[in-house]
Length: 408
Image (cartoon, rainbow, N blue to C red; front, side):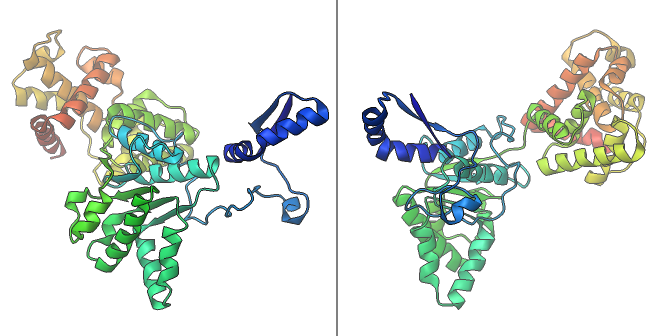
């Protein structure tokens, strides 16, 4: 058997389509070899004979363009590093499909979410995947601000024709981030709309991101809005508790920290949105731990998070929270510590556990002692209240009112 290696999957597929049968015939005639197989080389240290290939570099197929010059990519913004949960599953699946050329979700995707929830991560993951598996793909990746600035520059130099051709004739996939900044820019909207019209009709792939849902974009041309949303439209919501906890564990490991479940739970409970803020908190906790020469603990986490959220450092005790809950729900300390599972007692107890975790340095075990429970029961209570706050406005408002009373 003859085994031939190529630098990537695309190269092997290209050779297989055009030359594999010829190679097999020649191998059989000259050497009597009956089987020829193409594989992707583990190492990419391929070189050419003659020319600049002797100095190293990526091998290119005949007639293909060099890899596109793109805006800088974050090395960690890959699909492997993206934490999937119910809040982002559809967006992640659609991006993965577009990156591999799978048309299951169509060829046009509009993603919207508030800042820090993963739009840029997913968009760059698509580019990373394409460059890794199909490097000859013609990719155009930029922000709407860059698109607008380049368009103005080309108008001033009377080179709009070249500008348009760059996107229409040299683009297999177009990725434009932050299209919400195009509000109130009719000329830029018109130009991008023309490009989108051509690309979508020709079967090219398109990914657009925005901080706002399409219906909330003001001063946007109706035809442009319709074109942007002609494919799949999906939002990325704030991650649930389990997803936040997985994100925090992953980022702690990335920064060389051992994930302590008490610490993970505290950060996950304290920071509900903006994944960037979670990473900032982890970096701050690690820095404080290094400066003080002590292991990370809840006191450090609380200090860092309160600094991030603009909170205060006033001391609130677990007993004070227990007394407040007792007064508000008209239940006694004995009832809160009892084994009763009646809703009128179990719900206040769960709220008290949630608030104690949020406003004190107590571990899950410490909170359990206050309410005569073990740490797993406390963790369940915290998850339950977090879930109910996300799903029921009445409970969220009730807990927010209790938070305000505690802060006073």
